[in-house]
Amino acid sequence: MTSSMSVAAVNSDRISGLKDEILVRILSFLPTQTCVSTSILSRRWRFLWASVPSIIFEYTDCEDSIYRAMLLQRVENINTLCISGWKSFKWFQFDTWITVAITRNVQNIDLNIEHDGDFIPRCLFNCKTLVDLRLVWCGVIPTVPTACLPRLKNLRLIAVTFEDDDTLNHLLSGCPLLEELELQLIRESRNNLYCNISSPTIERLTVTFRFIDSEPCECRLRINAPSLRYLQISDRIGDESRLYPLFEASIYLHMDNSKQLDLFYPRSVLKFIDWLGLLDARSLQLDLSSYCSGLCKIEEFTRSFINSLNEIIDSKFFAGTLSFPTLTELQLTAACCFLTKFLGNANNLEILTFSEVSEEGKSWIWIEPLHVPKCLLSHLRVVKILKMADETKMFEFVKYLLRHAQVLERIELAYSVPVKSEEKILMQEISSFERASKACEIAFVAAAAKEADSDDE
Image (cartoon, one colour):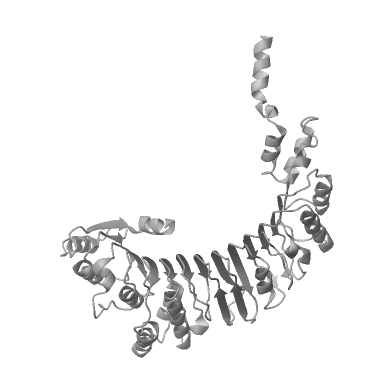
């Protein structure tokens, strides 16, 4: 009986049989305050937490506990410093935390401390061991002409302020190995917003423009990144960038009320899309829903205004020189006029996902291209239609595709749930259309499921 109880006791405390190195590894994933609390378990655990190479404090912890933890740690090198959820503390304490971490060769720093107005310690931008840096609401990033982060690969600057227009460039120039950059830029009051990104090594770039109010302003983004492979931009975009090939791009363009009747704004948007054509992206996700919806909402949505926009699209957007020669996959959320132009200028397009933007019955009509797009003759294999303003327009578009797409394998059409009687008739008619590609199948997919699949992609 005693023997069996002994075996049971051993089995019930298997964690104590692990080596210290393994226990320290487990503790490194926990908040520091939790690690410290394990010191009461036994004599062996009393100072085990002090060997954990990470410092993680969240929300309710007091400032002094961070400094005490740093003093009592027995490690020469700190892997991670993570402090989040702080709103009030003495700034000299923050400077001390950063300095101690740097002297201990910190590799990862993640700070979310909501401290406006004060400068982030300059020494942070001369840390020779830092690999990953994330700053959220941390105050003002100073201009450091001699910034030196020789090992930094990932940089995320969320809702921080830059001392001046040259701050970011100085910072990036000191990051010779940087691979991923994420920026969330905040615009308050009537201040204009300019961002100049220049780096020969960045492969992934995410830029989000966040607006505190609806006051009109000018936003400019310049990108000089010859190694860029992935680009994601959210909200308003202006100005131009130096142009380099991408594999994948995800773009969302916003239009506010102040620009709705300004014909120069549509020109600038189309100029930006011109620029996209020169990126040689293979996959493009372009969301013009806010832009097109804003145009549809205009009370003066007159025929002359639409004609003016169409003239801009025909003359400025695609004047015979723009093309998307490497584009093989397109996810487009826009008006039908953009769909026509993309089909005619993406000769190697293989996969098309389209969702039409309309507002209260106002939308552009579907106009067949003057010439059959080359992509329909030799490359377009899959078409997914998530939404079109009315059944007649979908009917005509699908009929055109089936008649001319010679290598088409599949068309997916979203339908509402429950299915209306007129939709059932439409499905039957579409299924009976003549097809240039005998291998093409037509699938009808519930709208909700279709949107979910698109989000996953």
